[in-house]
Amino acid sequence: MGEVELSCLAYAKMYLHASQFPRCSVNGLLLSSSSAGGALCITDCVPLLHSHLSLAPITQLALTQVDVWCAQTQQRIVGYYQANACVSDSSPTPCALKIAEKIFEQCNNAVLLMIDGEKMFPGCRVPPIVMYERKDARWALKDKHTIMLRQWEETCSIVNQLFSSGDQALLVDFDSHLDDITKDWTNQKLNAKIMELVSPANGNV
Image 1: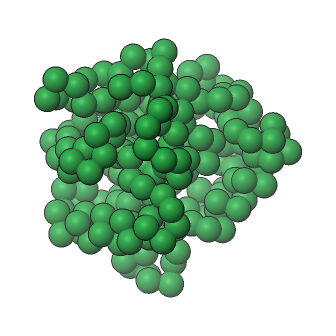
Image 2 (image 1 turned 45 degrees about the vertical axis):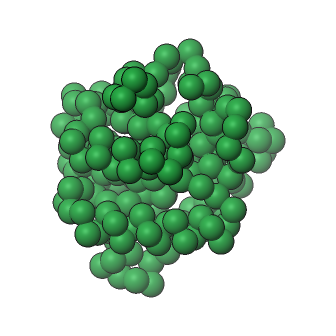
Image 3 (image 1 turned 90 degrees about the vertical axis):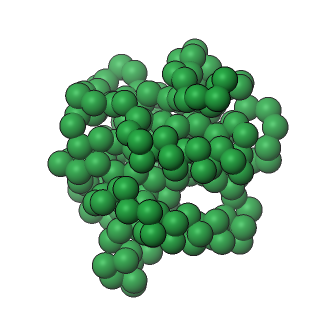
């Protein structure tokens, strides 16, 4: 598999999701608005759960709803992310592997991204992510040189601004939506705020 590019929007929401529930495992879906073929561009993500990650019915319900929304917005599910409750553990769990496998059945260049909790601090010089790709019938570590997060310093600055402003509270995952269906799991309000910060920073992160 070739290069994977991670947008500021997708990274910021994953980071805020993990930050909002620091004592929980969290997960979500990685989306792309670009067509299949060539480099995989992860343009957005949908935060899913912060409790009972292994509950299949809720996961299936979420996947179905996100699938429908993606069809309406010309996006596709291209991967899965997870942060484990134990910050020193960034290994994929059986649940992570199972969901990633399901996504791979529909997208043959899908990726599995684990968040490295030990590197989630301001000023970290490298993205706190560990990425896996499907290779030889198993999920293997992806070559870090083929993972791009453009303008990393600017992206870090934007995430720090969001965090210091308490904007992680704006993030709604599917779990929170099920508790209160008036909450928007597509996070349009937060998306707009992130994109406002991205635009003056460098035009397009």
